[in-house]
Structures are given as structure tokens and as C-alpha cells.
Length: 485
Image (cartoon, rainbow, N blue to C red):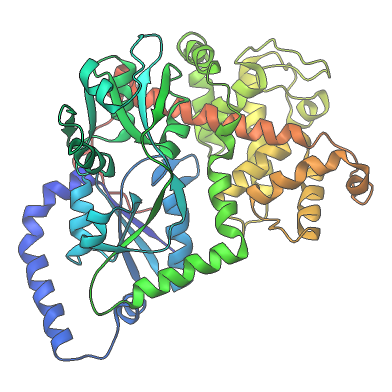
């Protein structure tokens, strides 16, 4: 796959009226071709055109832009499926769940991968692949407000409950209302889960319902939020396809997921996507945000300059520095590393850093060192894994990282996958394994925690900057935001 095309949902709505007539004509042409019996299936046509057109939602569990480009569980699965088909991936985003379901049902896209819960009402509109994940719908409230409800009826009676319009949550509430006439709630259009959680955190609304997988990732941003109770038992998430006689693409997707599951790769992908937040200390968010406000502004220009020079995301470089020193240029570890980027004396000398406690020198040296490690990681590895592997090497050393890749290969894992490598890095502490390696013993559990912490700091910093009014005021505005990546 050489290219991914991304169309922003708001941009699409502005252009929708202009292209409606064209879509109608193309639909009629397609129907005519089918009527003439071209003999080619939808799967054949997609392979012939070289493009797979998909609906999704912007969000941390679905599709977003990270330090290495597009990311998200849905994106990773889609990218693998497009590669499986040998085509390019065209992603179109919208926050409107009704538009997503209608778009699939009416054939405007080939499929939807948007964190969709399988429900009876949705199954009448579209058909779903086998599930790739199970989630629980949870009622969220702000802790410390003395308003933790015991059930949905008490939530509706004692506060204001809002959910996403056309969501599985709204559908569930409508079903529950039959037995609970006093149940009331509001449905909101044009927002996402993160915005609803922000409304609860700011005490603008009292409650909302979200999927457990999204809350797992978002709670780092809002440590005051809590789960009052599970609204449902675990429910399946899956991709959606149109009903109809041509099920060639649907059957291929079904085979794709079954092969992923049977090989163990599906469980590994899902586990890897959430693992970096499972041990995160939510209370640490307060301290981190405090440092973002008070410490980061002084060093941000240095981080931005160094990141630009070495082709890095400055927020990633800032996250590394926070993990190393909490943005303290005079930090010293028990092992003698020191400074903003906590460089060893040998590494500093190699990088030309003469004074490790000089933040500008330290940041410049750390950025250069990180870039050199990324460049050393084999180029055939995808960009996300290259960054996480390079960060592990920043902590434990490139030689020990290579030893872990060798052990991973011995254990029939994927030596190019961070998820596989992090399962095996801790084995460098065990004589059974490290005595077979070139570089010997290492505290292999430490680089795992190191990388996972940086991933969380990066996510929280990105979220904070995206929601800071001062940042939005200074952010350039473009007439049309539809980058081709």
C-alpha cells in the first residue's frame, strides 16, 4: 500500500451538496452495469480499481494522527486488510453514526470500521463480520460530586444524562424505557465521546454512557471521572457491510478476521493497543498537566527547534524528556545520567554535548540520539513500531534491543513488532535467556514501562494542546483540510 487518502468529516459535509448529483449518476451507472451482468464481483472491482473506500470516526480507538502518522485500532486492522487485498486505503471520517450506517447500507462506501456495536436494529440495516473485540457500555460520572447513581433510572431522576445520537447507547436507553417510563435522556449530534466526557468532567452534564475501551484510553485525560456501573454485559464490535446478493467483500473480510484470530495475531493487536494505559497512574495526570503549564513553556522553543532539525514530533520529544527528567535540566539519576534528556557521560561525549545540565545542549543531543536510533531500526518495519523500538533502545541500549528481537524470533514471535518485543524484553533478566545473547543481562522490564509511559505522556500532551484555547487561537486555519498522507 503506497498511499492513504484522508477526507475530514466537516470538509465532506461542505462538499456533499456539490457532489450529490455526481454520486447519483455514478450509482445509476453502477446499477446499469450490474444489470448488464458484467460478471465481476465487488471484490474484483475493488482490486481492479486499487482502492478500498471506508467510513470511520476520528478517535483514539478508531483513527487519529499520532507521532508517526495515522493510528488507532480500526486503522491498524484496516491497513492490514487493504494490504491483504493489495489495494490502497481511502478513509473518510464523520462523527455522525447515522451517516456511517446509511453510507454503508446505500453503498456509498465499501465498509464501515468505526467501533460499531452489533445490535439487532443495526443488523436490519447492515451485516457485520465476526467480532474483533468485546466492550462493556458504562455509565460515567464525576467523582467527588456525591452523585454516583445506582442505576439508570436514578441517574435520569437525579441528574442530566446525555449520549451520542444514533449510538448503541441511545438504542439501549430506548429499549430500557419500555420498562422504565420515567427514564429520560438527551441525544446530541455532531460530538464525539471525548467531548461528552469533557462535559461530565466540567460538570456541565452529570452523566454519559461510553464504551469501556474508549474510557480506558480517555480516563488519562480526566482522572476525576469514574464508572458508576456497567450498563450492559460485554457486547461485540465489528465491521459493517451492505446487505445484498454480492457478498464477496464481506466474505473476504470474514476470512481475514478468522485467519487473524486463528494465528493469534488479532489478540496480540488488540492487547497491544491498550497495554500502555493499563498500568497508568491516573493520579499522575494532575502532576503532568501542572508541569505542562508551568515548566514546558520555557523549554518548548528548544524542543520544537531540535525536533524540526531531526524530523521528529516535538510532542514526542517532550514526552521523552518528561519521562527522563520531568523537564528538570538538573536532574541526576543514581547511575550518573543527568540533565534534561538524562544522557550518560559516554553518550554525551559522542554527541558533542559538553555540559549535560545545559537544557539546550541536552535537548539537541537527545533529539540527535533518538533520530540516530530510529534510523538504525530496519527500514522495512512500520513507522510506529520503529519509534517504539527506538525508544526502548534509548532506555536499555541498542544491543539489548537486538538481543530481545533475537529472543522474540526464537520464541516464534514477530521481531519487527513492538507488541511482540515487549513480551520478550523482560526475559533479558533471566539467565536461561540472557546467557544465550550477545550483550547479556539487562533489566528488560524497564524499557517496557519506559515506552508505555512515553506513549501516555504523548497522548495527554496532544490532548491538552488540542483543547487549550491559546493553542487554538494561534493554530493556522486552512480553508480545506483534506491532506493526502
